[in-house]
Length: 319
Image (cartoon, rainbow, N blue to C red; front, side, top):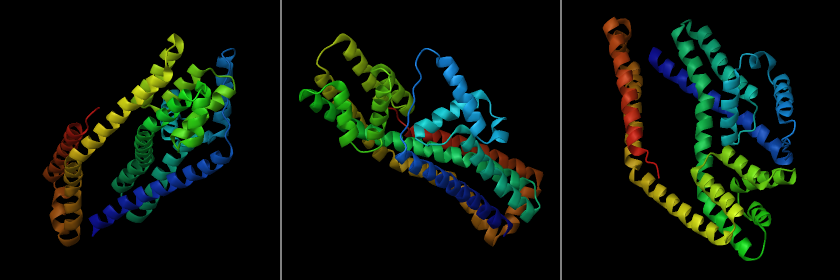
């Protein structure tokens, strides 16, 4: 029964972390739908502008927790949040991590009186928002890659109809669906505030982090500099990206069994331990009390991690 309670505590910590993360993120996104405000600094005075902005963000964020954040963590998490389109400051995200780690750990320490369970729950709660963030990054990146060929076709048809490049981007902003339309809208707003086409497109590439979009932007920038038929170039890029999306879809279908096998193999020992803790708790108690049993658990956990890593390397293919 003790181990069943332990398993339920871990599930509770994870669900609590997901609930807090999604609630705060959804509130920010609702505000951002009404307020679209993007500011880009001029090259003159850029260093001073960035310093003032950084100081203002530190003052507005959770001051006590923000003092412990390094610049490397700030820059890294800022890129991660931008790639996932999570409209939170770094300090706010770190505050969510701290709450998800400390609150369940405090409750479990009061309930169980054990130090190991609260520490494990704190680690799980701290990294749960990061796991959710990476999941959102992958989902959004897949949506962008799937929408990109249609967006390029819209731009190509607009150019063939006599529109300029900026007007073609506005066509994608109006007629495409999110999230690709949101990215084009942000690029157009940056250009309207004084940014060049190259700066706006490179900013889009840095925010998204997609190889397909990086290929598109590089080809467009080269074509705008040397000249030529941009509509034909966009048609060729759209066909290439569409073929890559099709191949990636086939790879996902072919490797579905392998990925499912990896999930089952990874969760099977924990599921068996949970079931045995309910029906035969004495069996697992020996593994925890005996030093040899603890060593066997450690070796088994390391072997489990190596196996999951190898399965992921086999089924994950780059296209």
